[in-house]
Length: 294
View 1 (cartoon, helix red, strand yellow):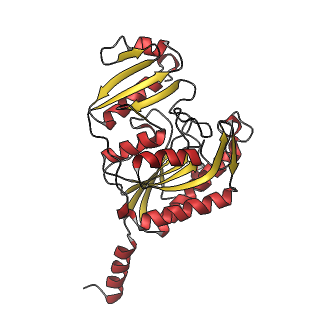
View 2 (spheres, helix red, strand yellow; view 1 turned 180 degrees about the vertical axis):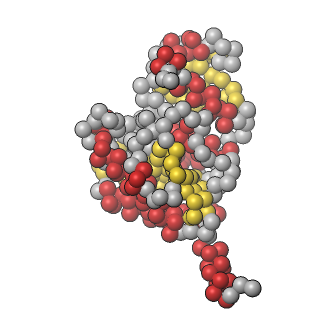
View 3 (spheres, one colour; view 1 turned 30 degrees about the vertical axis):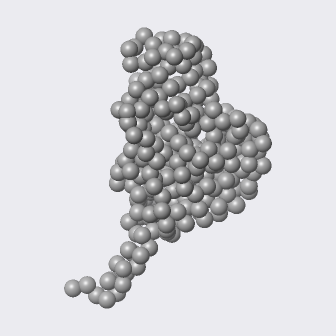
């Protein structure tokens, strides 16, 4: 027979929303202070510092989610080489998805068992006229990604993958253009604006600690009020359009019947849902047999 204390603790746990399972997808371009390639890759003189800031933003989200009742958290390291987060500085019971390739890209690991998703370090799309380091999936290769004619950012694309599993986006952290762009499409996610875009390589930024506080505030509120957020669902089948900076990828992909070349730089394909679309996009944007390693 349960004691009164046990019953009280169980009741408190239910009231606090304990047992919530949270997925965090972490990028770097949208992290506080990041503005150029000097912060974004191993060759940049500030990269090691910004790995710290990226990890700090993720930890702010983790700690706040836990304070609001989350008990299980999975993090997807989703920038560049997928090996950016300082995993030893994360809580020891948090698991991390690292490196590539992975079928669901920045959302690898998501499934219907999760209660909500948090985006940290997110940026605007390549279709956006504003935003720091604005691009979609590949700043070097792509100029546009659309689903059913709608321009997509990484945030809205990833929200649609989560939506396929019935999981809502709770918080989007990044620059002002990124937050506005995602929220305008997916609905009522909380926005944590850690910097304001001035140009592609310039921003007015918060102090890192202020950014952590803001992300924590938005995350705690969202997890406590998790029932107010709805999944962003795109009903299948979907038509995906991808435009390349160079014409050759569209030319070669059109050798396959599943791809239709709609202009010199653009291909189009159909998928039964966003999961299948993600799998195809991983091949379209990531396959490079000549650089395969054993």
